[in-house]
Amino acid sequence: MRWIRAHLVAIAGLLVLSYMLLPNIVVIVFSFNKPKGNYNYEWQRFSLDAWTNPCGTPGICDALGLSLRVGFIATLVSTILGTMVAFAIGRYRFRGRSSTNLLIFLPMATPEVVMGSSLLTLFIAMGIAPGTVTILIAHILFCLSFVVVTVKARIASLDPRLEQAAADLFANPFQAFIRVTLPLVAPGIAAGALLAFSLSFDDYIITNFNASPSSVTFPMFVWGASQRGTPVQINVIGTVMFLAALLLVATGQLISNRRAKTAA
Image (cartoon, rainbow, N blue to C red):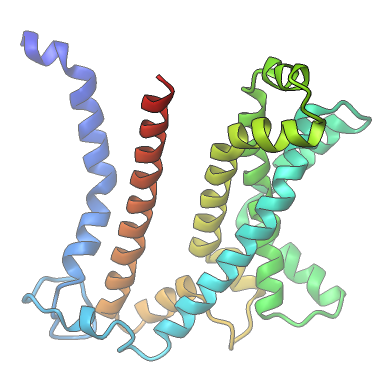
């Protein structure tokens, strides 16, 4: 009992982490399944067929490619714009600053059904046909708020004396920003970019409102496939995405630990 009390927080953390990762483990396990029918819900026998032919289901790789393209472009644009907005809000005082903060928060608080239908109404009123362009605009819109909030939190934690020290060492504002401010804000920018890509790649509701029949993203493909069957290739792609994200986070943590040891 003493050992349990001493390690109660660690035990609780491991239990919560196991509960959170359980669906991912199921996805990984069932990516090696060979179902008898169309539905990959019950384990039948081990097979590598889906891994050797991940594009075996018609349309799945086209949908994945569209989601990746939209995700990368939406992440790039929303990260650049969001970082600039975060610096403007976090560093400067101007008229309408409070209102801007409220407007930035609104897309995060608005239900996706409302946002998706509102954007569809806007695009129709402007004469823009639903398709890849409307999906991209919608993704940039709702990813922007998350990037601003993430980067602004990082900016708020910076010590302004570091930039003052750079100025004392004869650095001009641009040099101080590139060599001092930007490296310190970089983890927040990277976190905002990863969050934006995850939200863009995973979104279904807003995308479904603003997509055309020819612009099917991966979440839309998964939803459509679930009506008539669930190909094992879906689990394969999900496993690859999960492992890639895990590798990216582990690499970032390793680099951060090495920098901390070097600084010490």
